Length: 398
Length: 102
Image (cartoon, rainbow over all chains, first blue to last red; front, side):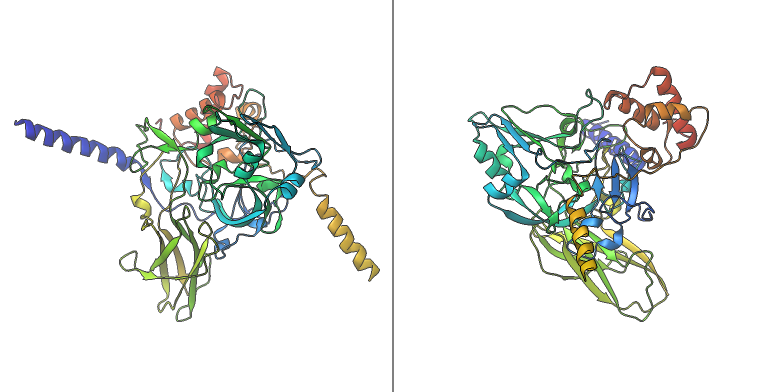
Protein backbone atom coordinates (compact mmCIF):
# COMPACT_ATOMS: atom_id res chain seq x y z
CA UNK A 1 0.00 0.00 0.00
CA UNK A 2 1.25 3.46 -0.88
CA UNK A 3 1.76 5.85 1.98
CA UNK A 4 -0.85 8.20 0.49
CA UNK A 5 -3.37 5.40 0.21
CA UNK A 6 -2.73 4.50 3.81
CA UNK A 7 -3.54 8.05 4.83
CA UNK A 8 -6.67 7.99 2.71
CA UNK A 9 -7.71 4.74 4.30
CA UNK A 10 -7.01 5.88 7.82
CA UNK A 11 -8.85 9.10 7.12
CA UNK A 12 -11.80 7.11 5.81
CA UNK A 13 -11.67 4.86 8.87
CA UNK A 14 -11.53 7.73 11.28
CA UNK A 15 -14.40 9.43 9.46
CA UNK A 16 -16.31 6.20 9.76
CA UNK A 17 -15.54 5.95 13.47
CA UNK A 18 -16.59 9.52 13.93
CA UNK A 19 -19.75 8.94 11.95
CA UNK A 20 -20.52 5.83 13.98
CA UNK A 21 -20.07 7.53 17.30
CA UNK A 22 -22.05 10.51 16.07
CA UNK A 23 -24.82 8.20 14.96
CA UNK A 24 -25.37 7.41 18.63
CA UNK A 25 -25.87 11.07 19.46
CA UNK A 26 -28.68 12.87 17.71
CA UNK A 27 -30.69 16.03 18.07
CA UNK A 28 -34.41 16.38 17.54
CA UNK A 29 -37.16 18.90 18.20
CA UNK A 30 -37.30 19.61 21.95
CA UNK A 31 -40.21 18.16 23.93
CA UNK A 32 -43.31 20.26 23.31
CA UNK A 33 -46.08 18.23 24.90
CA UNK A 34 -45.79 19.20 28.55
CA UNK A 35 -48.81 20.74 30.22
CA UNK A 36 -48.88 23.58 32.71
CA UNK A 37 -49.16 22.47 36.32
CA UNK A 38 -52.24 22.68 38.49
CA UNK A 39 -50.01 24.29 41.13
CA UNK A 40 -49.25 27.99 41.18
CA UNK A 41 -46.21 29.72 42.63
CA UNK A 42 -46.07 33.20 44.22
CA UNK A 43 -46.78 35.88 41.60
CA UNK A 44 -46.87 33.32 38.80
CA UNK A 45 -49.71 31.86 36.83
CA UNK A 46 -49.65 28.08 36.39
CA UNK A 47 -46.56 27.16 34.37
CA UNK A 48 -44.86 23.93 33.33
CA UNK A 49 -43.36 22.78 36.63
CA UNK A 50 -40.34 20.53 37.06
CA UNK A 51 -39.60 21.06 40.71
CA UNK A 52 -40.73 23.10 43.70
CA UNK A 53 -37.42 22.91 45.55
CA UNK A 54 -35.57 24.55 43.92
CA UNK A 55 -38.34 26.10 41.84
CA UNK A 56 -38.10 25.30 38.14
CA UNK A 57 -40.87 26.70 36.00
CA UNK A 58 -41.16 26.85 32.22
CA UNK A 59 -43.26 29.16 30.07
CA UNK A 60 -45.65 27.36 27.69
CA UNK A 61 -45.39 27.88 23.93
CA UNK A 62 -48.48 30.05 23.53
CA UNK A 63 -46.81 32.88 25.51
CA UNK A 64 -44.35 33.50 22.69
CA UNK A 65 -46.49 35.65 20.42
CA UNK A 66 -45.54 38.87 22.22
CA UNK A 67 -42.32 40.84 22.47
CA UNK A 68 -42.68 41.24 26.23
CA UNK A 69 -43.24 38.22 28.44
CA UNK A 70 -45.58 39.15 31.30
CA UNK A 71 -43.90 38.91 34.72
CA UNK A 72 -46.20 36.15 35.87
CA UNK A 73 -45.31 34.04 32.83
CA UNK A 74 -41.53 34.43 32.90
CA UNK A 75 -39.62 31.18 33.53
CA UNK A 76 -37.94 30.46 36.85
CA UNK A 77 -34.70 28.63 37.47
CA UNK A 78 -32.95 28.47 40.83
CA UNK A 79 -30.08 26.12 41.59
CA UNK A 80 -30.29 25.67 45.33
CA UNK A 81 -33.20 24.63 47.57
CA UNK A 82 -32.86 27.36 50.16
CA UNK A 83 -34.16 30.65 48.81
CA UNK A 84 -34.51 33.60 51.17
CA UNK A 85 -38.27 34.01 51.47
CA UNK A 86 -38.21 37.30 53.34
CA UNK A 87 -36.24 40.38 52.42
CA UNK A 88 -35.90 43.24 54.84
CA UNK A 89 -35.20 46.15 52.52
CA UNK A 90 -33.67 48.18 55.30
CA UNK A 91 -31.04 45.55 55.81
CA UNK A 92 -30.62 44.44 52.22
CA UNK A 93 -27.54 45.74 50.48
CA UNK A 94 -25.08 44.85 47.77
CA UNK A 95 -21.61 44.56 49.18
CA UNK A 96 -18.97 45.80 46.73
CA UNK A 97 -15.52 44.93 48.03
CA UNK A 98 -12.11 43.48 47.19
CA UNK A 99 -9.86 45.42 44.84
CA UNK A 100 -11.69 48.71 45.34
CA UNK A 101 -10.72 52.02 46.86
CA UNK A 102 -13.92 52.30 48.87
CA UNK A 103 -16.03 49.42 50.07
CA UNK A 104 -19.72 50.00 49.27
CA UNK A 105 -22.86 48.77 50.96
CA UNK A 106 -25.55 49.73 48.49
CA UNK A 107 -29.18 49.56 49.45
CA UNK A 108 -31.79 49.41 46.71
CA UNK A 109 -32.77 52.92 47.68
CA UNK A 110 -29.17 54.08 47.14
CA UNK A 111 -29.16 52.44 43.72
CA UNK A 112 -32.26 54.40 42.79
CA UNK A 113 -31.03 57.74 44.17
CA UNK A 114 -27.29 57.83 43.62
CA UNK A 115 -26.90 56.50 40.10
CA UNK A 116 -28.15 57.23 36.62
CA UNK A 117 -31.23 55.10 35.91
CA UNK A 118 -31.17 53.15 32.67
CA UNK A 119 -33.61 50.87 30.87
CA UNK A 120 -33.02 47.98 28.53
CA UNK A 121 -35.44 45.57 26.88
CA UNK A 122 -33.76 42.24 26.66
CA UNK A 123 -34.32 38.57 25.96
CA UNK A 124 -33.29 36.18 28.71
CA UNK A 125 -32.63 32.52 28.09
CA UNK A 126 -31.30 29.64 30.16
CA UNK A 127 -28.23 28.04 28.56
CA UNK A 128 -30.00 24.70 28.82
CA UNK A 129 -33.21 25.90 27.19
CA UNK A 130 -34.51 23.21 24.77
CA UNK A 131 -32.15 20.66 26.36
CA UNK A 132 -34.65 17.84 25.74
CA UNK A 133 -33.60 18.04 22.06
CA UNK A 134 -30.37 16.16 22.79
CA UNK A 135 -30.23 12.34 22.62
CA UNK A 136 -28.78 10.57 24.56
CA UNK A 137 -30.19 12.57 27.45
CA UNK A 138 -27.69 15.06 28.78
CA UNK A 139 -27.23 16.06 32.36
CA UNK A 140 -29.69 18.62 33.74
CA UNK A 141 -33.35 19.56 33.60
CA UNK A 142 -34.92 18.41 30.36
CA UNK A 143 -36.38 21.76 29.40
CA UNK A 144 -38.70 22.25 26.47
CA UNK A 145 -38.18 25.62 24.79
CA UNK A 146 -39.85 27.88 27.34
CA UNK A 147 -36.86 28.63 29.57
CA UNK A 148 -36.72 32.06 27.97
CA UNK A 149 -38.55 35.36 27.97
CA UNK A 150 -38.16 39.04 27.26
CA UNK A 151 -38.61 41.91 29.71
CA UNK A 152 -37.96 45.60 30.04
CA UNK A 153 -35.55 46.14 32.92
CA UNK A 154 -34.74 49.29 34.80
CA UNK A 155 -31.69 49.69 36.97
CA UNK A 156 -28.19 51.10 37.11
CA UNK A 157 -25.06 50.29 35.14
CA UNK A 158 -22.74 47.79 36.79
CA UNK A 159 -19.86 49.95 35.45
CA UNK A 160 -21.17 52.98 37.35
CA UNK A 161 -21.34 50.99 40.58
CA UNK A 162 -17.77 49.76 40.11
CA UNK A 163 -16.64 53.31 39.26
CA UNK A 164 -18.17 54.61 42.46
CA UNK A 165 -16.26 52.05 44.49
CA UNK A 166 -13.13 52.96 42.54
CA UNK A 167 -11.26 50.04 41.03
CA UNK A 168 -7.62 49.54 41.97
CA UNK A 169 -5.04 49.08 39.22
CA UNK A 170 -4.90 45.38 40.02
CA UNK A 171 -8.60 44.67 39.51
CA UNK A 172 -9.34 42.30 36.64
CA UNK A 173 -12.32 40.12 37.60
CA UNK A 174 -15.47 40.31 39.65
CA UNK A 175 -17.19 37.47 41.43
CA UNK A 176 -20.94 37.80 41.82
CA UNK A 177 -23.36 35.95 44.00
CA UNK A 178 -26.72 36.38 45.58
CA UNK A 179 -29.60 34.52 47.16
CA UNK A 180 -29.00 31.24 45.32
CA UNK A 181 -27.18 29.79 48.30
CA UNK A 182 -26.22 26.24 49.07
CA UNK A 183 -28.01 24.26 51.75
CA UNK A 184 -24.81 23.18 53.48
CA UNK A 185 -21.69 25.22 54.17
CA UNK A 186 -19.39 22.89 52.32
CA UNK A 187 -21.40 23.14 49.11
CA UNK A 188 -20.39 26.03 46.93
CA UNK A 189 -23.06 28.68 46.43
CA UNK A 190 -23.98 29.84 42.97
CA UNK A 191 -21.12 32.14 42.00
CA UNK A 192 -20.24 33.63 38.67
CA UNK A 193 -17.33 35.66 37.36
CA UNK A 194 -17.08 38.46 34.82
CA UNK A 195 -13.97 40.02 33.37
CA UNK A 196 -14.12 43.74 34.11
CA UNK A 197 -12.83 44.71 30.67
CA UNK A 198 -15.75 42.85 29.09
CA UNK A 199 -18.52 44.55 31.03
CA UNK A 200 -20.53 46.73 28.66
CA UNK A 201 -22.72 49.76 29.31
CA UNK A 202 -25.76 47.55 28.81
CA UNK A 203 -24.96 45.35 31.81
CA UNK A 204 -27.17 46.59 34.60
CA UNK A 205 -28.22 45.84 38.13
CA UNK A 206 -31.99 45.83 37.70
CA UNK A 207 -34.66 46.46 40.29
CA UNK A 208 -37.65 46.73 37.94
CA UNK A 209 -39.01 44.26 35.44
CA UNK A 210 -41.72 45.51 33.08
CA UNK A 211 -42.30 48.54 35.27
CA UNK A 212 -42.93 46.51 38.40
CA UNK A 213 -40.67 45.32 41.17
CA UNK A 214 -38.87 42.15 40.15
CA UNK A 215 -40.98 39.10 40.94
CA UNK A 216 -39.65 37.33 44.00
CA UNK A 217 -38.93 34.18 41.98
CA UNK A 218 -37.05 36.17 39.33
CA UNK A 219 -34.61 37.62 41.83
CA UNK A 220 -36.29 40.36 43.89
CA UNK A 221 -35.04 42.87 44.88
CA UNK A 222 -32.18 43.14 42.35
CA UNK A 223 -30.64 40.96 39.72
CA UNK A 224 -27.87 41.36 37.21
CA UNK A 225 -28.87 41.70 33.54
CA UNK A 226 -26.29 40.94 30.86
CA UNK A 227 -27.91 41.52 27.47
CA UNK A 228 -27.01 39.02 24.77
CA UNK A 229 -25.60 36.49 27.22
CA UNK A 230 -27.23 33.29 28.41
CA UNK A 231 -28.86 33.90 31.76
CA UNK A 232 -26.45 31.83 33.85
CA UNK A 233 -24.59 34.96 34.97
CA UNK A 234 -27.72 36.98 35.63
CA UNK A 235 -27.33 36.56 39.36
CA UNK A 236 -30.61 36.76 41.31
CA UNK A 237 -30.96 38.59 44.64
CA UNK A 238 -27.53 40.01 43.92
CA UNK A 239 -25.81 40.79 47.19
CA UNK A 240 -22.10 40.41 46.69
CA UNK A 241 -19.63 41.84 44.19
CA UNK A 242 -16.09 40.84 44.96
CA UNK A 243 -13.47 42.57 42.81
CA UNK A 244 -10.40 40.37 42.38
CA UNK A 245 -6.96 40.41 40.81
CA UNK A 246 -7.11 36.88 39.57
CA UNK A 247 -9.66 34.48 38.19
CA UNK A 248 -11.01 32.22 40.93
CA UNK A 249 -12.20 28.73 40.28
CA UNK A 250 -15.87 28.03 40.93
CA UNK A 251 -17.97 25.02 40.08
CA UNK A 252 -20.54 27.05 38.13
CA UNK A 253 -17.78 28.66 36.09
CA UNK A 254 -15.30 25.87 35.54
CA UNK A 255 -17.37 22.70 35.41
CA UNK A 256 -21.00 23.55 34.75
CA UNK A 257 -22.27 25.93 32.07
CA UNK A 258 -19.49 25.16 29.62
CA UNK A 259 -19.47 24.01 26.02
CA UNK A 260 -16.78 22.28 23.95
CA UNK A 261 -14.26 24.78 22.66
CA UNK A 262 -14.22 23.69 19.02
CA UNK A 263 -15.77 24.92 15.81
CA UNK A 264 -19.04 23.04 16.14
CA UNK A 265 -19.11 23.24 19.96
CA UNK A 266 -19.78 19.53 19.97
CA UNK A 267 -18.49 16.22 21.27
CA UNK A 268 -19.56 12.59 21.48
CA UNK A 269 -21.10 10.84 24.47
CA UNK A 270 -18.02 8.58 24.62
CA UNK A 271 -15.40 11.29 24.29
CA UNK A 272 -16.11 14.60 25.89
CA UNK A 273 -14.06 17.53 24.63
CA UNK A 274 -10.96 18.28 26.70
CA UNK A 275 -11.05 21.95 25.92
CA UNK A 276 -14.18 23.80 26.97
CA UNK A 277 -15.31 27.41 27.29
CA UNK A 278 -18.03 29.17 29.27
CA UNK A 279 -21.46 29.75 27.80
CA UNK A 280 -21.61 33.33 26.71
CA UNK A 281 -23.40 34.91 23.76
CA UNK A 282 -26.72 33.48 22.65
CA UNK A 283 -27.08 32.12 19.14
CA UNK A 284 -29.90 33.11 16.80
CA UNK A 285 -33.25 31.49 17.57
CA UNK A 286 -36.92 31.75 16.68
CA UNK A 287 -39.96 30.15 18.19
CA UNK A 288 -43.56 29.87 17.04
CA UNK A 289 -46.13 30.97 19.64
CA UNK A 290 -49.21 30.48 17.49
CA UNK A 291 -50.50 28.08 16.35
CA UNK A 292 -49.48 25.37 18.79
CA UNK A 293 -50.18 21.68 18.36
CA UNK A 294 -53.34 22.24 20.42
CA UNK A 295 -54.72 25.10 18.29
CA UNK A 296 -57.90 24.72 16.27
CA UNK A 297 -57.00 25.58 12.69
CA UNK A 298 -59.68 25.57 10.02
CA UNK A 299 -59.26 24.82 6.35
CA UNK A 300 -59.92 27.70 3.96
CA UNK A 301 -59.80 30.20 6.83
CA UNK A 302 -57.16 32.85 7.44
CA UNK A 303 -54.36 31.83 9.77
CA UNK A 304 -51.76 34.21 11.18
CA UNK A 305 -48.65 32.42 12.32
CA UNK A 306 -46.93 34.36 15.08
CA UNK A 307 -43.75 33.98 17.03
CA UNK A 308 -40.58 35.62 18.29
CA UNK A 309 -36.93 35.72 17.25
CA UNK A 310 -33.80 36.99 18.98
CA UNK A 311 -30.04 36.62 19.12
CA UNK A 312 -27.00 37.98 20.97
CA UNK A 313 -27.81 41.55 20.00
CA UNK A 314 -26.74 41.75 16.37
CA UNK A 315 -30.45 42.06 15.63
CA UNK A 316 -32.87 39.98 13.59
CA UNK A 317 -32.69 40.49 9.83
CA UNK A 318 -35.47 38.15 8.82
CA UNK A 319 -37.62 35.23 9.86
CA UNK A 320 -38.50 32.70 7.20
CA UNK A 321 -41.47 30.36 7.19
CA UNK A 322 -41.67 27.04 5.38
CA UNK A 323 -44.82 24.99 4.88
CA UNK A 324 -43.13 22.25 2.82
CA UNK A 325 -40.60 20.90 5.31
CA UNK A 326 -37.91 23.37 4.35
CA UNK A 327 -37.93 23.10 0.55
CA UNK A 328 -39.12 26.67 0.08
CA UNK A 329 -39.10 29.59 2.47
CA UNK A 330 -41.09 32.80 2.60
CA UNK A 331 -40.38 35.90 4.58
CA UNK A 332 -42.50 36.69 7.61
CA UNK A 333 -43.38 40.26 8.57
CA UNK A 334 -41.29 41.64 11.41
CA UNK A 335 -42.79 43.91 14.04
CA UNK A 336 -40.99 46.88 15.54
CA UNK A 337 -37.57 46.26 17.12
CA UNK A 338 -37.87 47.20 20.80
CA UNK A 339 -34.11 46.86 21.20
CA UNK A 340 -31.41 44.85 19.46
CA UNK A 341 -31.49 42.45 22.42
CA UNK A 342 -35.27 42.03 22.60
CA UNK A 343 -37.66 39.47 21.21
CA UNK A 344 -38.72 40.54 17.71
CA UNK A 345 -42.26 39.46 16.91
CA UNK A 346 -42.87 37.96 13.47
CA UNK A 347 -46.13 37.14 11.74
CA UNK A 348 -47.08 35.34 8.57
CA UNK A 349 -50.54 35.25 7.06
CA UNK A 350 -51.73 32.22 5.13
CA UNK A 351 -54.80 30.17 4.39
CA UNK A 352 -54.50 26.39 4.71
CA UNK A 353 -56.57 24.95 1.86
CA UNK A 354 -56.63 21.28 2.84
CA UNK A 355 -57.66 19.42 5.94
CA UNK A 356 -55.07 17.24 7.62
CA UNK A 357 -51.64 17.83 9.12
CA UNK A 358 -49.88 21.11 8.52
CA UNK A 359 -46.25 21.51 9.57
CA UNK A 360 -44.93 25.02 9.99
CA UNK A 361 -41.19 25.72 10.21
CA UNK A 362 -39.67 29.01 11.36
CA UNK A 363 -36.05 30.04 10.84
CA UNK A 364 -34.46 33.28 11.97
CA UNK A 365 -31.48 35.00 10.32
CA UNK A 366 -29.59 37.76 12.14
CA UNK A 367 -27.83 40.82 10.80
CA UNK A 368 -24.53 38.94 10.78
CA UNK A 369 -26.06 36.40 8.38
CA UNK A 370 -26.14 33.65 10.98
CA UNK A 371 -29.18 31.43 10.66
CA UNK A 372 -30.73 28.59 12.58
CA UNK A 373 -29.77 25.07 11.50
CA UNK A 374 -32.25 22.21 11.29
CA UNK A 375 -32.64 20.36 14.58
CA UNK A 376 -30.86 17.26 13.23
CA UNK A 377 -27.89 19.35 12.09
CA UNK A 378 -27.06 20.47 15.60
CA UNK A 379 -24.33 18.39 17.15
CA UNK A 380 -24.43 16.98 20.63
CA UNK A 381 -22.73 18.39 23.74
CA UNK A 382 -22.88 16.77 27.13
CA UNK A 383 -24.36 19.75 28.95
CA UNK A 384 -27.22 20.00 26.46
CA UNK A 385 -26.54 23.69 25.87
CA UNK A 386 -27.22 26.22 23.12
CA UNK A 387 -29.84 24.33 21.10
CA UNK A 388 -31.19 26.68 18.43
CA UNK A 389 -32.77 24.42 15.81
CA UNK A 390 -35.37 25.60 13.30
CA UNK A 391 -38.68 25.45 15.12
CA UNK A 392 -41.44 23.15 13.93
CA UNK A 393 -45.12 23.02 14.85
CA UNK A 394 -47.58 20.52 13.42
CA UNK A 395 -51.29 21.30 13.63
CA UNK A 396 -54.43 19.48 12.59
CA UNK A 397 -56.33 21.50 10.02
CA UNK A 398 -60.02 20.70 10.44
CA UNK B 1 -67.75 53.94 48.19
CA UNK B 2 -65.90 53.92 51.52
CA UNK B 3 -65.86 50.17 51.31
CA UNK B 4 -64.27 50.25 47.87
CA UNK B 5 -61.59 52.68 49.01
CA UNK B 6 -60.89 50.47 52.00
CA UNK B 7 -60.56 47.37 49.82
CA UNK B 8 -58.25 49.20 47.39
CA UNK B 9 -56.18 50.48 50.28
CA UNK B 10 -55.86 47.02 51.77
CA UNK B 11 -54.91 45.58 48.38
CA UNK B 12 -52.16 48.20 47.98
CA UNK B 13 -50.89 47.61 51.49
CA UNK B 14 -50.78 43.87 51.11
CA UNK B 15 -48.93 44.24 47.78
CA UNK B 16 -46.29 46.41 49.42
CA UNK B 17 -45.93 44.03 52.29
CA UNK B 18 -45.45 40.99 50.11
CA UNK B 19 -41.69 40.64 50.62
CA UNK B 20 -41.29 41.76 54.17
CA UNK B 21 -43.80 39.11 55.06
CA UNK B 22 -42.35 35.71 54.39
CA UNK B 23 -43.22 34.61 50.87
CA UNK B 24 -45.06 31.34 51.08
CA UNK B 25 -43.38 28.99 48.68
CA UNK B 26 -45.46 26.40 46.91
CA UNK B 27 -44.90 22.87 48.05
CA UNK B 28 -45.59 20.02 45.67
CA UNK B 29 -45.43 16.31 46.39
CA UNK B 30 -43.66 14.59 43.52
CA UNK B 31 -44.48 10.92 43.93
CA UNK B 32 -41.82 8.31 43.18
CA UNK B 33 -42.46 4.55 43.16
CA UNK B 34 -42.43 2.87 46.52
CA UNK B 35 -40.26 -0.14 47.36
CA UNK B 36 -37.73 -1.23 49.99
CA UNK B 37 -35.19 1.32 48.74
CA UNK B 38 -37.45 4.37 48.70
CA UNK B 39 -36.04 5.18 52.12
CA UNK B 40 -32.58 5.52 50.53
CA UNK B 41 -33.99 8.22 48.27
CA UNK B 42 -35.69 9.89 51.20
CA UNK B 43 -32.53 10.11 53.24
CA UNK B 44 -30.19 11.21 50.48
CA UNK B 45 -31.95 13.23 47.80
CA UNK B 46 -34.43 15.53 49.45
CA UNK B 47 -31.89 17.64 51.32
CA UNK B 48 -31.28 19.60 48.19
CA UNK B 49 -33.99 18.90 45.64
CA UNK B 50 -37.47 17.58 45.04
CA UNK B 51 -38.11 14.26 43.32
CA UNK B 52 -39.17 16.37 40.33
CA UNK B 53 -35.52 16.22 39.25
CA UNK B 54 -35.64 12.43 39.12
CA UNK B 55 -38.95 12.25 37.27
CA UNK B 56 -37.74 14.66 34.61
CA UNK B 57 -34.80 12.61 33.32
CA UNK B 58 -36.63 9.95 31.32
CA UNK B 59 -35.64 6.28 31.14
CA UNK B 60 -31.87 5.94 31.40
CA UNK B 61 -29.04 3.41 31.60
CA UNK B 62 -27.56 2.09 34.81
CA UNK B 63 -24.35 3.96 34.09
CA UNK B 64 -26.29 7.23 33.61
CA UNK B 65 -27.97 6.88 36.98
CA UNK B 66 -24.77 5.92 38.73
CA UNK B 67 -23.04 9.00 37.33
CA UNK B 68 -25.90 11.13 38.62
CA UNK B 69 -25.61 9.67 42.12
CA UNK B 70 -21.83 10.11 42.16
CA UNK B 71 -22.20 13.72 40.96
CA UNK B 72 -24.60 14.42 43.83
CA UNK B 73 -22.03 13.07 46.26
CA UNK B 74 -18.88 14.60 44.77
CA UNK B 75 -20.12 17.95 43.51
CA UNK B 76 -23.08 18.72 45.74
CA UNK B 77 -21.65 16.99 48.81
CA UNK B 78 -24.70 14.83 49.50
CA UNK B 79 -23.62 12.52 52.33
CA UNK B 80 -24.16 9.33 50.32
CA UNK B 81 -22.46 6.25 51.74
CA UNK B 82 -20.95 3.66 49.37
CA UNK B 83 -23.81 1.30 50.23
CA UNK B 84 -26.42 3.97 49.52
CA UNK B 85 -24.67 4.80 46.26
CA UNK B 86 -25.33 1.23 45.10
CA UNK B 87 -28.88 1.12 46.44
CA UNK B 88 -29.82 4.51 44.98
CA UNK B 89 -28.42 3.51 41.60
CA UNK B 90 -30.34 0.26 41.73
CA UNK B 91 -33.55 2.00 42.73
CA UNK B 92 -33.25 4.60 39.95
CA UNK B 93 -32.40 1.98 37.33
CA UNK B 94 -35.22 -0.30 38.46
CA UNK B 95 -37.89 2.38 38.13
CA UNK B 96 -36.37 4.76 35.58
CA UNK B 97 -34.09 2.43 33.64
CA UNK B 98 -33.96 1.71 29.92
CA UNK B 99 -32.71 -1.89 30.27
CA UNK B 100 -29.19 -0.87 29.19
CA UNK B 101 -26.12 -1.11 31.38
CA UNK B 102 -24.42 1.73 29.50
